[in-house]
Each structure stands twice: as C-alpha cells, then as structure tokens.
Amino acid sequence: MFAVSSLHFNLARLCQGFFVASLHTSTVKMASEKCLAKGSAAPGPVPQDKIRIYNMRFCPFAQRTKLVLAAKGINHETVNIHLKEKPEWFLAKNPLGLVPTLETPAGEIIYESPITCDYLDEVYAGKKLLPSSPYGKAQQKMMLEHFSKVLPLFYKIPMGRRNGDDVSGLETELKEKFGKLNEDLVKKKSKFFGGDSITMIDYMMWPWFERLAAFGLEHCMDGTPELKKWTELMWEDPAVKACMHGTDTYRVYIEAYATGKPDYDYGL
Image (cartoon, rainbow, N blue to C red; front, side, top):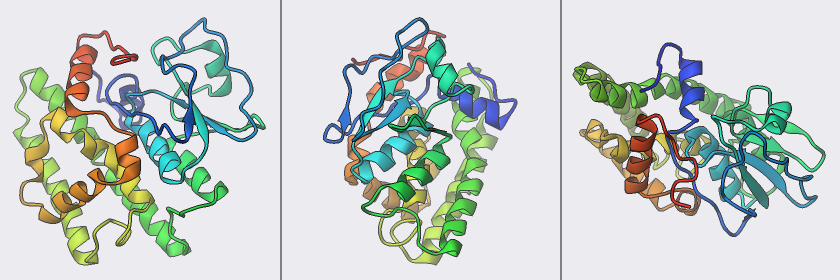
C-alpha cells in the first residue's frame, strides 16, 4: 500500500493521498478547488492583502497550516497541487515538492508544516497560538517531537490489516501512546494540551485524531477518558469545523488511494 521504511519519507509520501482538509470560506479565495498538475500554468502574483497556501486537500500536514489560517482569520488563497504530477513551477518554488508551502506577496516561500504555522502565528495579529514564554514554546515543541514518533502507527496499522498481518502488537503500542497523552492531560488538569484553550500543539496533533474512525482506530482510545474529552472539544472548534470532511469521505478516498489511483479532486 505504501512504504514505511523511513519516517521522513513515509510521512512526506502520505501527503500524496491519504487525508482530507477543507476550506474556511470566509477567509479563503479560490478560483477552483481542483488541483494543478504538471503542464499547468503558474498562478499569478499573490495579492497584496493575502498569503497563498499551496495545499493538497487530503494531507494532514497541510491541514495543520489550514487550521492556523482559519483559527487566526488570516485572509488567504489556496492553490491545490497534484502531488503525483507536480507542476514544474511548483517545484521551482519548493524543490522538495511538498505541501504545505506558503508564498507571500513579496514572493517569499515558507514550507514544512510546523515552520509555516509558527510563521503565521508570529507575523499575523490576532489570537496567539504559541505560548508567550520561551519555556512554554519549548514545551510545545518537545511535545510535538514526541508526537511525531506516534505518527507511523496511524499508517502501519491500516497497512498491516490490508496485507493480512497481525497488527495487535501495533494496536497495543498505539493504545500505550494514547494512554500517555491521557496522563498528560490529567497531570496538567486542563482541557487542552496547552491549557484551558486551544493552542498550537492541539492543532498540530488534531488532523490524525480527526481520521481515527476512517482508519478504524477509535477503539485504541478506550480507557483514555480525558483524551476522549479533548477530541470532543476539538470537534466543536470553529477552525476544526472549517477544515474537515466526514468520515465517509475519508474512507472513500483511502480506498481509492489503496488501489493506486488517488483522486485528488474527489468530491468536487
């Protein structure tokens, strides 16, 4: 289904076809949601009053940036990219060819999801998602680093099931990871991972929890009441609601991806 030999390679490749993010219609402008592929004409300059995100509607990493754009009410436009047939002009902007990528009116290019999110929080006014203290920022970055070690399990388990493998050990490992996240909330005595309101770390982790049902992994949260409460609260967040699709949509797309024919424009 897909390779898991290296974390960096695996996670980057998975942005080519596994997950869905939608649009915040009050702050995003798009001529068309359809993705642009090799041979397409490059979009014009970024308008002075906007920032542009190069996105893929099914990428959880890009959804991180979309969540921050929505949460801060940043006026932006979205250009969706066909990641199996990447436009030449996109590779000229970002040689890695990955999303999310931001472009400013000055032609400045920023990529990698945590970097784009930190950039948006620092540059744009409004609610600050990162803590104000250096230690608070460091805590969130350390937690994000720990969470990055959990991500392969979200992919290995469905892949193993499809291959007919015994994934009980992997499921046990994921349950243990979720248990530690639950303990973190208990120790902090807070609703969210950064306090009693949503902060950057919540948005950095959320896209994978949004897809638990589509992966058939909801049972891995059994015995984690505080983590379940966190997911319930996250579902009610306006930015989350603006950047999501239903579980059925995720499942249909995942099946298409598994056949080797991902439809980046599915549902349009």
